[in-house]
Length: 117
Image 1 (cartoon, one colour):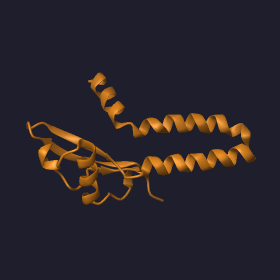
Image 2 (cartoon, rainbow, N blue to C red; image 1 turned 90 degrees about the vertical axis):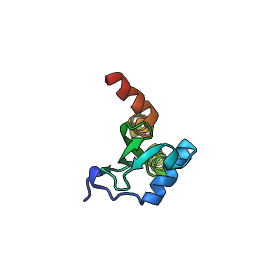
Image 3 (tube, rainbow, N blue to C red; image 1 turned 180 degrees about the vertical axis):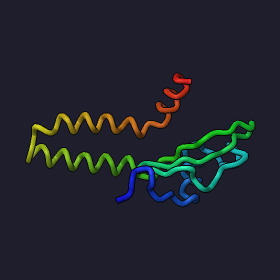
Image 4 (cartoon, rainbow, N blue to C red; image 1 turned 90 degrees about the horizontal axis):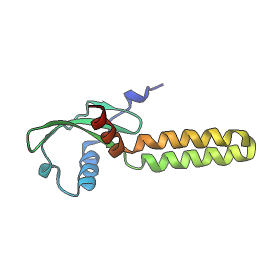
């Protein structure tokens, strides 16, 4: 079995498209360099080293395409099954879903990191 932090990396063309879509501009207008090889890949995304145009070194977390949609679909299916087979498990599943959804909010994560610094 594969650990969550040993997942295969997404192809760089997909990473580029994702970043450019999120920022609304080409990679070269945001970064002076962007490592194609990620420094880590996990279950919902991967992390790349990059340098901003002002020279600041950063890491860029890139979520895999459709991962949130797939997760929501999986949880919906599990909850529907639980409602029929084991209704007592629905409230804990809803709490798990709520907690997991925070994993998809990279903006909030970034804000929390700023506060910790």
